Amino acid sequence: MSKRDYYEVLGVTKSASTDEIKKAYRKVAMQFHPDRNPGDKAAEEKFKEAASAYEVLSDTEKKAKYDRFGHAAFGPGTSGGGGGFSGGMDMNDIFSQFGDVFGEDVFGSFFGGGGGARSRSSRSKGQRGSNLRIKLKMNFEEIANGANKQVKVKKHVLCTTCGGNGAKDKNSVQTCGTCNGSGQVKKVTNTFLGQMQTVNACPTCNGEGNTVTAKCTPCKGEGRVYGDETISIDIPAGVQDGMQLSMSGKGNAGERGGSPGDLIIMIEEESHENLHRDGLNVAYDLYITIPDAIFGTSVEVPTIDGRAKIKIPAGTQSGKIFRLKGKGFPEVQGYAKGDQLINVNIWTPQQVSPEEKIELEKMQLSANFQPKPIKGDKSFYDRVKEAFK
Image (cartoon, rainbow, N blue to C red; front, side, top):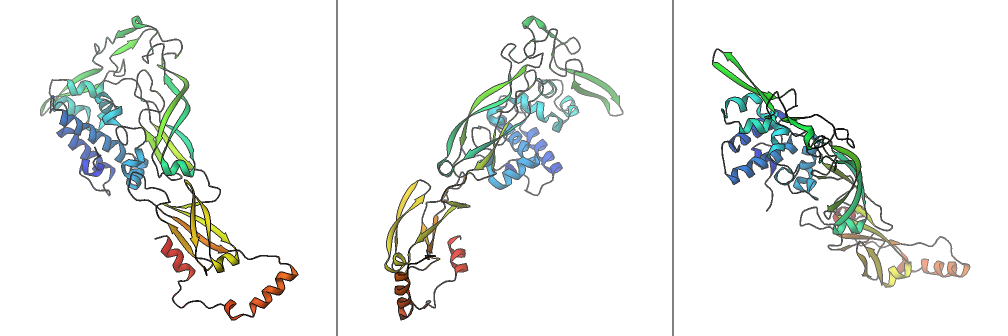
């Protein structure tokens, strides 16, 4: 199922300001909020969809990548688009990360005494892990066909001893006495409009609902340790040098059960021995002899996926460009495909023997060897411009 455009999801334009995006997200999130639509799976999915859109459009760097590449900028290995909310994060993560967009007072007054939304917005599971960046080298063949890379990444990983909660054992975790496990404290104030109830994260347990009496020894209470993880990364065909891709939840593990950060993959394009890239097209310089240019010949040229034979017609001029349709790079997550452009260069010998010099001087006097460009021939500039359209 294709993803909807994030601007369409929030009902804003690409020129919308940060505040406009925030207000739009708040409006959509309120409309499809779980407490307003209990048991409605469709509304829940729209709520998650809006959170995914806001996560990308509210971040300057992610927004710039999305404007350039669309959903493909966050494609490999993710199931929820830019941040992966619909697949990589649950409802608690959304409330934990974006609860400030709604405001604590909104949950306290709008949703009344039910407490469902307040509990999710103020109760957090530790601290979210930071994003991690790596560089990944790709050769022309891998870029053209897409590739799966197994990469060992050094990072913070979940502590297997305590399972991420930072406690020495199950008896070292107790319910917070300040908030009685709710992770929040309520405050009622009298105003000229009546009583106003606000809900804030518990200062004793930082909104977690419990406290640790004895810390886990290996992780020293953080719930994570420094280690490594081998990650399988699916790279789509057609990526370009400098393009950044994102894998949700594959960054550093969070503290005390907090959600993990993302893994940002920067593509490094390895140079090819013979070919050069220009967008979706591939360029190759072919050198032929003067006799081959005069009489014509057949030659093999390298391509991204092997070799191809092309025919050089008799009388081919230097600068002639031949095109191999569909032998270039595919468009990322698209249907377009580039071509291979072959630029013919007639090799001029830099040294000749005395006998060769005599023969060449004879040919120089022949009328057939005098330059006679055809009037309709395109200039070099026109040929290049046409080839790279």
